Image 1 (cartoon, helix red, strand yellow):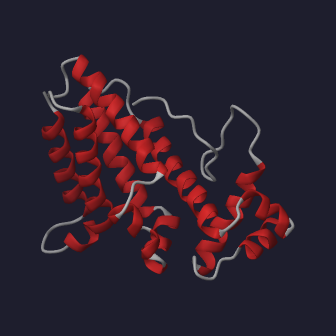
Image 2 (tube, one colour):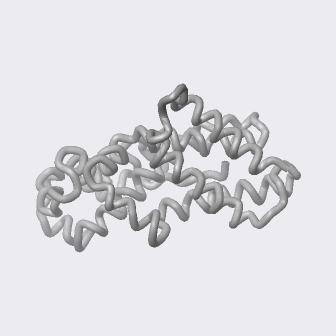
Length: 207
């Protein structure tokens, strides 16, 4: 997939430039959310955990929603980049794109921050499902759309409006990220659903 410049995940350190000091503050916020959840996390507590003054945090973010937006963008971007990095460049384009999408979905479903948010503060996710797209969603759409355009030019991806195809793919992915666990049982496990998702995406993209 198209190269993605990572902006400082706690899990994947950038080697291109020194780490942004704000990443240390985001690490502290992440630890707070994992420990006590969104409702009990404050900028004051983030400052305490980061070992800096409250004003240092307030200069970076005026409120918790702003901080949360940057934290979630960093976290989900890191998940996507990890899947992109692991993609096999020798695979045909459609297979590589699908494998990357499936791997991203699997990683999100087990990401400790994502799991914690869903368990304690699921309302934080609702705006990005019901009202608007977030920065990480737009980033993913841009990457997928670029791959679709390149695949169409190479004759490997079916004809159609690349933006529409990418957005349809993301909508399908939402269900597998958030609701796959509700479809388990009666002989259906995670591996079976992953196989179905792979088949769905490959047939939906193939020329």
